[in-house]
Length: 360
Ligand SMILES: NC(=O)C1=CN([C@@H]2O[C@H](COP(=O)(O)OP(=O)(O)OC[C@H]3O[C@@H](n4cnc5c(N)ncnc54)[C@H](O)[C@@H]3O)[C@@H](O)[C@H]2O)C=CC1
Image (cartoon, rainbow, N blue to C red; front, side, top):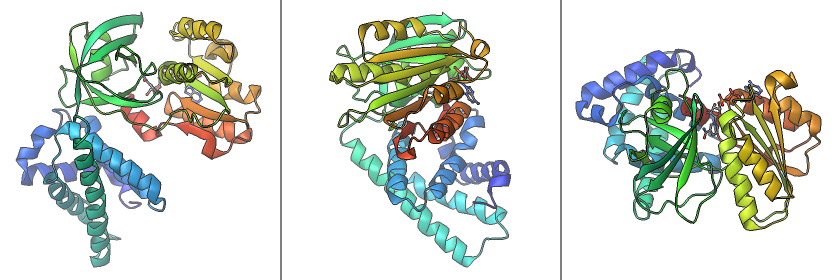
């Protein structure tokens, strides 16, 4: 992987060329434009390589990946085709490290990876659909480029506050982006998302500027482990940057529903006051719940970014920390929390790799 990483782009193009030349029928499972798709397989391999010594994390990651592939129409018989193209691409680019032993190790690794994914998908097939249709029932433009979208799934959609799901729009088939649920599970079964239209973001622009009530989206299964541990009564420190406030709001509602008296401290940061689009909702929640404190920060006024503010108000070592926002905020947020004595095991956030994919 070390040899491949610097030329990742070349290797992935070669991989897809091999795959589609040998199996043209598989092309229709992928989006028309392959730009973001292209680096996903390599990111997945790099993530797997990073956790190679941590079996529990690795297996959970791969099981999730296997379940998540059901919505793309992936079948067990597709795995060998991908494996051959992958090994073909790796062997012709990792020329310094490739040899018989290396090839045997990759065949074993790929066989294990695919078996875990196939088994997880098969088990999931018995209890959940591959995807859900969800009709847009409300579309509220909060700023010129941020919308709060509420949808009604066609079948019950069980999930936990703090999780996220893949979303596909009817305008860009097979292009999926992740969004967090912006509310805890509701009695009426509706789900909501906060979407910011980002430059050249196909899905985000379609959702913000094109989607209207009556349009039907597809949702993948709920995923993510940034959920509340209801077996402890520790306080929650929640840091939400920009639309990263969406799952934080869901977590606050979740704590409220469980009725536990736990202190919840929310730091909500945005670039400008307009970007602090959900502050009214957060302040209303604060008024309703004496255990909740919400501190808004606007970069330009505070002359500092969100993690610096969190550090200033610490120490936080008695809290479970939840971080949600752009990858840079998560990285410096983790540093800031570790500096103030919060153990890594008590810091939760979605994987930065997933968030990078979610940004477009
Ligand atoms: N829409 C959703 O459901 C969710 C979105 N996200 C992610 O949240 C992000 C939201 O984007 P925007 O609203 O444009 O946020 P943004 O880029 O405007 O940043 C929001 C705030 O985070 C802090 N921040 C940003 N970059 C930082 C850095 N490098 N170091 C320290 N602090 C930093 C700043 O205080 C900034 O005001 C996207 O990356 C998105 O993928 C995360 C979870 C859920």
